[in-house]
Length: 360
Image (tube, rainbow, N blue to C red; front, side):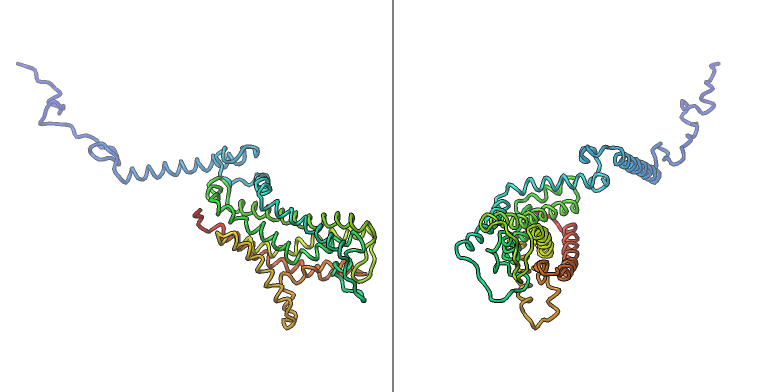
């Protein structure tokens, strides 16, 4: 008798009539594959682990990568880098200034600002100056420009601030964004690991620096031309008060700084329009237009005290420094008047620029 295999009696797979049922793991199909809900839950868990690991490594890099290493090379997003904000912003400003200074519109504007004091000095040297029988109020330094070389920088500030310096400030800040848009470089700049806020800040500070240089050029070259033409004498003001050379230089410095600040509203408005439009001419003309409209309204006596809130009403208030005693109240009020304009215009510029669609 042939011995039957015990495996067939116990349900071995060799016996097709009797098979041992397979044990299916929990969460799997009978075919052995993982069910769809279980697979999705495990994939979600893996994604959470990967996301958490990515955040941990990012924070580790932020606090361990030296600030000298560029954030783009270290893989850290620029907007997450807080420690290196000031150094990187300073680097952006330095890059912007190095890019702006060689441009023809920059150095031509500065050369023109330096030429105007010499032109005014030559005009007074050849034609003399106007004289009045009575002392004038503070300001009107063109009336006494030939009495001392130190009167000439005051006269040039008096003559250039209402228009020529307005044009220069509107040009430098009005082209802050539109110049990059016109050349199609703005999208390329934003593709780098630099936030829009930091880019706008660097552009604005560069424009402010160039505007300040323009004001300094007018005062400095006016001083040089005046001293060469009319000598180094004590200053006689339009109101008939005499000041020593040292006191005049100190007051001239304060007047120059105040003139820079009195143009802040014009520059910030040009910056705002620069973020809104793609036209450089429109952005520059907007600042000039604001100054012209302000001057027109300031010349209407019927407006009364409403004129004190105009951005150009206190532009020449530094002339009160040359009274005896000096009257600082108009300068303090003029400083305060500029603040709301600057805050509102710069805030709107930042809000718009960080949300606008860059198409070019």
